[in-house]
Amino acid sequence: MDKDKIIAELNRHKKMPYLDFRLKQETEEFTDTLFYTLFDTNTPVGVNLEMLENKFNHLMDKACMELEKPSEELWNSYIAQLPLILEKLNLDAEAILNCDPASLSIQEIYMAYPGFYAISIYRLAHELYMAGVPLIPRLMTEYAHRQTGVDINPGAKIGKSFFIDHATGVVIGETAIIHDNVKIYQGVTLGALYVAKNLEKTKRHPTIENNVTIYANATILGGETVVGANSIIGGNAWITESVPPNSKVYHTPEIKIKTAPNV
Image 1 (cartoon, rainbow, N blue to C red):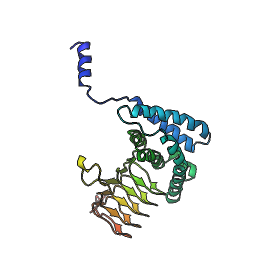
Image 2: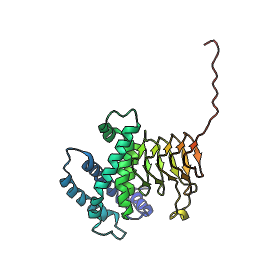
Image 3: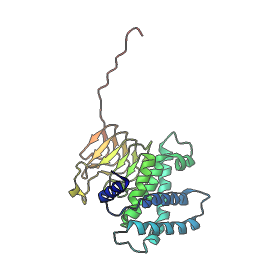
Image 4: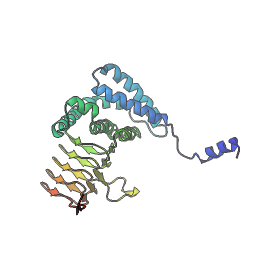
């Protein structure tokens, strides 16, 4: 097959809707600028907010190519929420500092903890998700997912003082609800019990109430599953039904140790 035929065949099979992958790259640049605007001491907030508005409008032009563009007041409404988002993120950072004995300073939390970064990008994306912005919030959280190993859907609802330790492998689904002062360790999944497209508008992921700790590799599934306040979920637990408040749930594996003689 000659080159012209190859090109023709590629174009014939290119049946996807309008895709401009610059949207992905530019969303990642927007996300970085937004993060630095909130946290970097040397970044001028006023100058960057104007830059971010231009970037955002450019992104919206691409993201809404085949959709109705949301109100022009959206950006002003969004930046009005930034002080509250920053206040929540500062509480998240303090929760990590207070809970993790390995943390040496608050600066270390902001600059080196992947869990904090993932939570930050989630909170920034969540407000856009709630405002009905298409695609951009998901691109933001997937950017954080790629960098941290933490997959938080921007539709999830997460309360104050949230702590993710070690981060890698955490999955939090779109309809999950997490209340205040919750601690989650690596490998935890807050997922759906069933996966079917007709469940798109239903609550598929669990609710975690106040002051719950979920240890590594626990899996909690189902939209009707509620983990009651002040409960502790042990590592590797598999939960598909509700847990009463003040409970401890644990999985006990059978461990056998054989020591070779005369070694």
